Amino acid sequence: LLLLRRAACLRSCRRHARLGPDSLHAAGHEVRADFQRRLPYSYLQRAYIQLNQLDKAADAAHTFFMANPEHMEVQQDLENYKTMAGKVDLVDREARQHMEDYLAGVRHYDQEEYALAISFLERALEGYSTADEECRILCEGPQRFEEYEYLDYKVTLYEAIADHYMQVLVCQHECVRELATRPGRLSPIDNYLPLHYDFLQFAYYRVGNYTQALECARSYLLFHPDDEDVLDNESYYEGILEGSVDLASIKPREYAVMFLRRHKLEAHLLQTAAAGLGFSYSEPSYWSISGSRQDEHRIPSGVHSEQSDGSGRHLGKKTMPKGDRELQEGGPLLYSDVKFVYNSEQLNGTQRVLLDNVISEKECRELHQIANDIILAGDGYRGKTSPHTPNERFEGATVLKALKFGYEGRVPLRSARLFYDVSEKARKIVESYFMLNSTLYFSYTHLVCRTALPGQQSKRNDLSHPIHADNCLLDPEANECWKEPPAYTFRDYSALLYMNSDFEGGEFIFTEMDAKTVTASIKPKCGRMISFSSGGENPHGVKAVTKGQRCAVALWFTLNPLYRELERIQADEVIAALNQEYLGPGELGINPKDEL
Image (cartoon, rainbow, N blue to C red; front, side, top):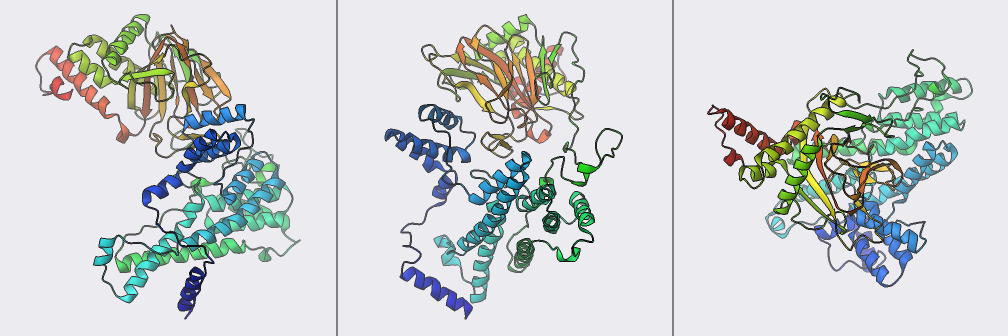
């Protein structure tokens, strides 16, 4: 009866246009994907420019950029709008209010403005509840099948109802991920909903509201009952409140209890249906304990404790995680000619090193010559302008291509081998200096030159290579770096080995996460190498090359052998074959020509 009443109600709403007119066309997957990436705002920006409505163009560009933080051209457009239109307060026209309030709450929390943090985080929870309800309702729309599937779909009434309901239930269950995902991202914020309660428990503690602190701690523990830090917090708050209130009356938030009960029931239904109806379903991990807060005040008891463990660290404070390995630096440089210049501290960052004399002047000249010979032959970007700026030509060559040209006699084979040898030398130095306990593999090796294009350098205000990170998508607006595709998430370390200095501009720079505040600037010269970890801790870029040609060997490394550079493996085999050919017949059975 309830089912019939609900169906009649919806049909009545449609008949009287209370829900608005039905769409005449169903959007296809590609159109929906474009809207998910906010591509229409890229067109809107251009249209508003033609209408000379710069304020609206700036908001459209900002809305697009929030979902596409790697799009450096739009980032430059935004800087131009701020200059031309004086536009400072940009509006994200697709902002999700619950997400905006959460991020604002976290920012106030980080600034120790706890009263404001509480206000925004509580509002974020209310907004989350509303957004969750809307998301779940939208899942109840019609389920579309491809025509040929529909014609072959012959099942009983109960099977049809069950199949349709399971599709709806999967969609509703995924609202947890949908509401935790920032625009344009593939991955949700780890531990998103529980983090609200985690931030709130400490914020309430800091403003002296211990009852709410305990309530929020207990709400968080519904999701992670074994979190030792928050269990300690719960005991700490209970100790403060004992004797003044009935501790049993302070219960987890009702919404958290209801939400988790429903979520567990849905998971059970889906797993039961998967077993009974024969479809594949695996329950994702929606709330990872690795997504917990990592600030030093996660345990409030540590704020007042003067005890320490002898190392100067206060007991009760949670230290930053170090991942699967401990970050180190200062290992041997392996080669006597290599000169240490600056370490991480002197370069104002983390996991950074600057070295000189990695290769000699003669080797620089030889590499520079082979670079011009190879790229002139059409390798790399085939003489096209840079993918990063229209004001430079960007060309490159791989190790395997160099060896191929060497074997064919188009460049000296000795020079091609030099490219291979110096890249291996750089790899060994990086592996040793950062004291890595596992093998560092090549993930990509590229000999690259940037050449300033004559007549295009006046009033230039762009970069040769915009600020970015090597294994994550840098999001300066959110002060985050998202480690997800299309970023090369498997890269662990990077290095740049320079060949020359006879050009203008082209300084390598490190910045803060805002992509604006420069923390270190390095002038390239022969034999100089800068190396650093590839993550969001090291945003970097290259200033405009305004005259001449700047050449370097760019190297990216991985600790995961699954992501070894295929061309490098082939180059290794070519070198082994060439060595065997030089030494005489052997048992390797490798023909260099076959490998090339």
